[in-house]
Image 1: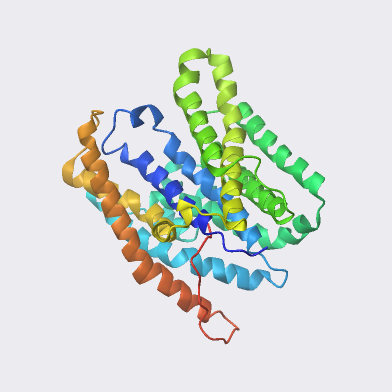
Image 2: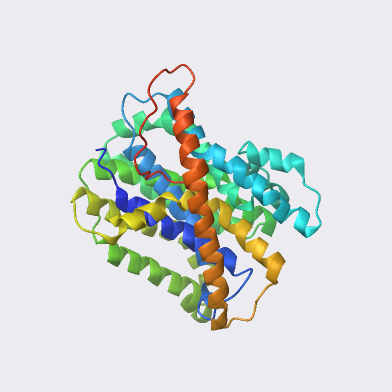
Length: 369
């Protein structure tokens, strides 16, 4: 049940890098990516499904809520606080804005995603809004997981299908609401994104019970890529407005399912002890840096914008700017992981309130950021 899933750690890097590709279009656009500018934002969907999967996979019946919450705090808060401080000059001072300390403090308290105002949920370090959703998931997981594990397989599978249908139906209903509310509800709101986390939880339980992905990792990744092509290229050019809107709503169910299929297929590789490039040590290392990469990349990109301006004309020469943004972001994530994230997590775990023990040895993390 608790086999190390290094392939999932490797996958985390690609999810974080997809988000980087999404934000780099605000700096320098590329001829092919210009048609897929929204796909990178779905890396957050991957993280939410993965988070539910990994937390459930690593759960032990001896786990109690209090130490679980402390481990989650040690995992995400120190680096979140530091990267928020690094982001403030870039997203406020450099743009001639005064720091909005109220929203920034909400961000530091992981509460920003509950406010239906972009200047609030993107306050501080804009990328950190997803941590507000994760904090909500973390609060619920130890309270509900034992009941989930005790449930029978068929009701669990039905619940998973119900979650996906409910998400698609909600998206269809919300399509006619004011844009600010719809944007918050379908992308930011923790209760809506809970469905993706719940899907990851259910998939982990099914894998623990012996179920396996119906297809391999590469076919699952190919299906996900095909969905992006249909969503961003084919459907907008071929479907009338009504069916196109329905297809967009269906995507809120289809994409989490495709990411879930990819995650289970990757987990199967480790469970079967098969060779995989995702388990290659450099890939695992990149995956370990992915949380820092996710939190620091926007700060790097918008610093480059301040220094060099924007390059909106979609030309291949912008590959140089992409390489610069990617290299600096990955280098910064490596430094943050080695000097801040990992050491502070070890120290905090060793100094858990009410616990006296030797500092734990933290293995290569497969936990979702």
